[in-house]
Image 1: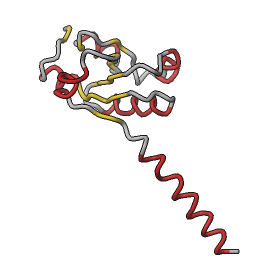
Image 2: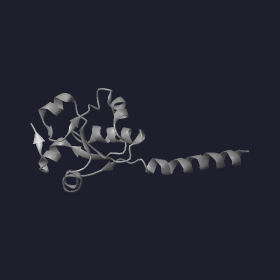
Image 3: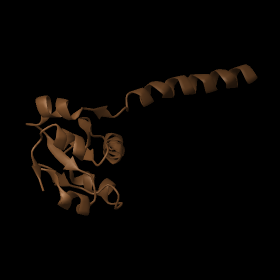
Image 4: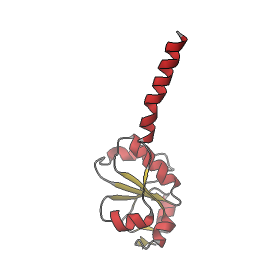
Length: 126
């Protein structure tokens, strides 16, 4: 009986592991975004409205990850589109991208922090 239980537990964990590997958030450096992807997809700044107002990438829309409404707002977004997310450092945008992937979005990229994107020469609106 113990052998069967151990075998079932081992099988369960071995089946669950590959799913976690497939959920890694895709990232692009600011340079990669600038060179390869900046002409397609939806650019989303997940910082607060105050951070966004202080300066953001020209084509970015703002969807505040910290206010608790982000998960609800993405329900109305087209899951077939490609999304590029950024914040101040890449932390919030990584969490937001993970949340979007878990909601069924396939083409979501974390492109890092605003200052790095600005330093890479992407157009900004101050």
